[in-house]
Length: 254
Image (cartoon, rainbow, N blue to C red; front, side, top):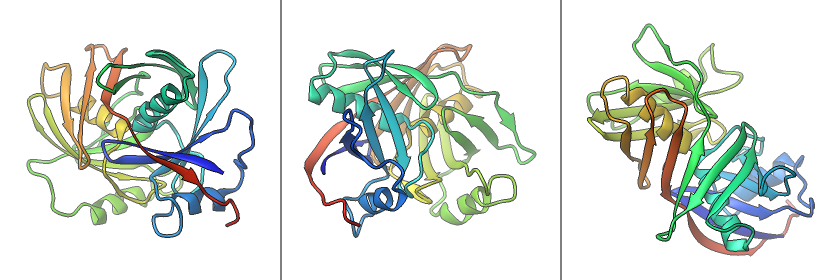
């Protein structure tokens, strides 16, 4: 089986060209093993590029645990770069994902800008935290300074009574005008990841509650992302690197 490896701000993905529908999408164990960092290729998720009738292609995203996931912002940017490498698209494209149609553009410097769908209503918890859906559900905690360790608190929230079945991504952010520091625990990976695109968008939306800015530089553990939007929240762009790492062959005999 031929695969490609891409990363966006350290968020890494196995890419498969599945236009011929040969990949066994129901084989959860296979996908999980391909994503395993010791026994497989190693990735935060696996993405299939497939044919679509009403767009240039379709993105099908699987979490590292092998189960199909919701929208992945950095994965969306990486699959656009993948389609560009395959010669399927020019600099502008549209593609279908689990949350609907997305538009994207590849710039001359290799950055990919992805239009994200309108988020759901922002809910504020009694603790003063924020819950919203930017293609994937996010729980956002605004901190005065970034905690040294986030896993214990993130897992307490993610596996708490409210979220234990569907799961939720947990973000810790520090705000300074148009600058955001972020660390994200992702469901499906069940660990901290180097970056999260939908988490960066969620962080920018929360940051906009405290400032008049509409463009934010989001510093993740793996690199810099940019999020910009208009104030009525109907147009969001997630922009950053989407880099080809390597390609190879793997036996699908797990």
